[in-house]
Image (tube, rainbow, N blue to C red; front, side, top):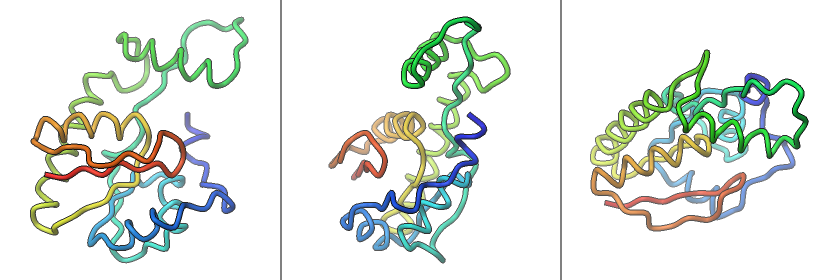
Length: 158
């Protein structure tokens, strides 16, 4: 997970133009502060309105204690996420704490959206999902989802 967090987005992994336009139109955009998120901001051409917040880092993936099992990386990712959701989190943030973090972020985004009109987030898959659940509890609704892969976007409105 550390190597993944420290990796940057490949320069040829350019975002769709509509994504660039949307993110550049926002008065404030948050990143998680990890290199991948920061390089995404650079590829989008964002500069002065970007703020890093460690609360947006991806939910951890613990390594299940299965040393002799060989699987494709996607299978390991899925297994790790399942065991984490089941409460297995040795040496990393527990899912309950990640949920609390997502609720805190949703509250901050809710307040900032009132103050600035709109706010953007460049974060990571599972963290985005948990923040989205928390935003819905605060009365936000999902207006758009462009997919689940790299450069996918969620738009919430209140």
